[in-house]
Amino acid sequence: MSVKRYDAVVVGGGGAGLRTAIEIARDPHIRVAVVSKVYPTRSHTGAAQGGMNAALGNVIPDDNPEAHAFDTIKGSDFLADQDAVFFMTEKAPEIIYELDRWGVPFSRLEDGRIAQRPFGGASFPRTVFAADKTGHVLLHTLFEQALSKDNIDFYNEFFLLDLIHDGERVKGVSIYDIKNGEVLVLQAKAVVLATGGFARIYWFRSTNAIGNTGDGQAVALRSGVPLKDVEFIQFHPTGLAKTGILLSEACRGEGGYLVNKLGERFMKRYAPEKMELAPRDMVSRAIEYEIREGRGVGEGARAYVYLDLRHLGEERIKERLPQVRQLAIDFEGVDPVKDLVPIRPTAHYCMGGIHVVDYRTSETPLKGLYAVGECACVSVHGANRLGGNSLTELIVFGKFAGIAVREFVKEVDYLELTEGEVNKGREFIEDLMKREGEENLAHVRAQMGEITWAKMGIFRDEESLRSAYEELSELLERWERIPVVDKSKVFNTNLIELLELRNMLELARAVALCALNRRESRGGHSREDYPERDDENFLKHSLVYYENGELKLDYIPVRITKYQPTERKY
Ligand SMILES: Cc1cc2nc3c(=O)[nH]c(=O)nc-3n(C[C@H](O)[C@H](O)[C@H](O)COP(=O)(O)OP(=O)(O)OC[C@H]3O[C@@H](n4cnc5c(N)ncnc54)[C@H](O)[C@@H]3O)c2cc1C
Image: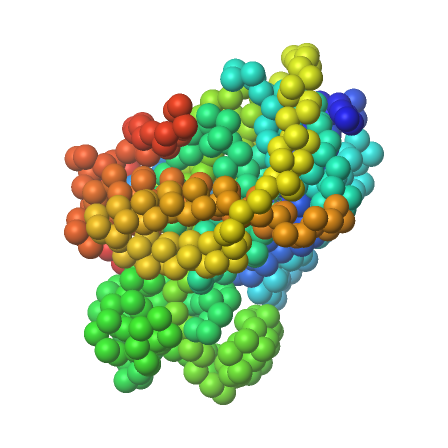
């Protein structure tokens, strides 16, 4: 059994993981491992299109970090921790200039300064971008920076199985080599989870990469670390109608309209001031209301409304939205230069995640364990994230988590591993490979997708959530009887999908439970039986965790330092 030692292991090779690893590795004496189940440049960060927010004030000089903070807090429906939000918005400009120096090719204004575009819920044009491929260029630049460090080793195409810990402090991780079926243990003083989001639990309709299955969150949950605010899922308004593939918010930022089948810009009914640039939760609900009232095209799951970009003109579409145009042509068969584009909301982002207890360091309740990026909940997004704030979060909190880990590993020693801890991952895989049963992976996964979409989607209520919880619990039992049909050791995607399915089912069930117990509507969580926000009872974060094999709930206060909650109007 192979055991290797690193001061720090970062699980995740997306924007969050790479930014954190680069910062830890600034001290050449510290050895870092980056583990990623896909080659790092295939991480979902590379799919981000529209851009990232920082109050540079390049287009309108009045913009400032405080305005960015206020927009973020209002956008969060007042559930974000305000001190953490201020931390992010104050650091955002300097991290953009750092990325600029590292080589991220941001789009420019005529005078050479970094360009900024309007985005939903923002009071100034604040989103910096590289056409509509911001995540792609960001990820590649970070990967180049990480590759240039001699003290970072990459474990590409390795799958995180488990955290090794003694209940108080983390000792390392066990990982599975997808290329040859071997299990390895990486002993570490600190582990950073940066495994991305889990919006793939909405298997039926999601913008997320197939691999966004929340493995890090599920591993943390099983290790006794709470997840925070997982009931808050973001549905993005403009998914292509047939596939749910994302068309960036940049479409509306650049001036696109949303119209119903009567050709009406219906957002005037829901957000008369901000119109299409209201926050995502509101725009998604508006589209669904239009469809319910019969003003969409078609009915049921296949109905849609239109995104209209035609008035922007061919030149602007080709310059600013080239990827959007190509996606519409390839996956919907329409050209936005001359056609209306059929769209419908689609599952996009997880506001909740692994409970971070200190935003300055990204520590979790388990000593030596840190969480960064979409898998973490700091919380800066509260009940609804503003577009462009996720990439900013990865880079700001990644940097400061890196600094904290660098200091931590200098102060502590390795903890001894027991033989049982070293062998556990290998034995688990051996048992799984031998498992027999009559269930079918694809069927169980499809059922999960139907339950999550229909019963815990954009609209929820007591009955739908209760039955989602029960049915997902049954699917978890059925998971125990799904055999691994492919017995090979080389690139066994059957085994990987089975591991991912368990993670998704556990997370989906946790979402259902938190959503069931939050009897109010706030941000992305919309209860038809409790349509109002209820600050008296629910201005608090939910925590969900395992105790003796059962999911339990707890609540902690929101940190309100400056802005008292008010009604959210746009
Ligand atoms: C289509 C799309 C467009 C978006 N556009 C924008 C935008 O314009 N602006 C914005 O701010 N946000 C945007 N977002 C959101 C943002 O891109 C993501 O929240 C962010 O990139 C997540 O980064 P991350 O580093 O946390 O995770 P990811 O980039 O998802 O990376 C996760 C990493 O974890 C690894 N991993 C996961 N599980 C395991 C495991 N079991 N073992 C080993 N490794 C594992 C993966 O291999 C991967 O390297 C968009 C999201 C999508 C889906």
